[in-house]
Amino acid sequence: MRQITMADADYPLALRAALRDEAPGCVSAAGNLDVLRGKALALFCSVKCPGNLILKTYDVACALRDAGVTVIGGFHSPMEKECLTLLLRGTQPVIVCPARGIEGMRVPGEWRGPLAQGRLLILSPFDDRHKRPTEELSQCRNAFVAALADEVFVAYAAPGGKTDQFCRRILRWGKPLLTLADDANATLIALGATPVEPGTIGKKVAMGSQQ
Image (cartoon, rainbow, N blue to C red; front, top):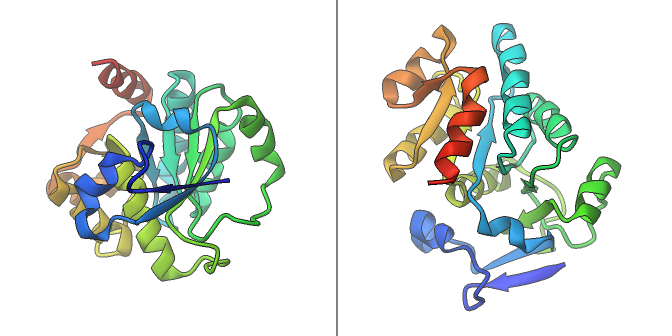
């Protein structure tokens, strides 16, 4: 594991650009730091996802995997965890950001192969005092993930919920926000999120990363 401070050349400038005074002074990393040098898409979904969006979100994860898009997330909600399982079966980079310190953390079996292959990076803005995720840490982690990403995809945000409020913050940053083109996301789209179809998101994000 490596500690990256603001004085380190590997410290992500995107954190300071988005979070400003809230940017973490130190980031813990395990895995291939070269993964940070490419563009990344953040993936989020509310804890409760409407049934009609579940299959679409699976399709999104597969499309991103097949297009070779680097995906970053906390992968905490049930839908996010399912997406991570699909992503780890590919060959593209993945960045996982737990809502806790990572020193001494047990690495799940499905992460070990991608770690050894150099395509998985584990990042945390928390020190080893934080050994268990909490609601507060999760909110800080989500901001950390979104700040690192070039674009953010939210499969579903329950209107008025915590993910909805989080999306409003992302839009205030001026960061591109994508969501599934579905009536369930009408509120999010009205706020300024760009609606996308599962079959086109992989190509759209991959093409944008090459510009």
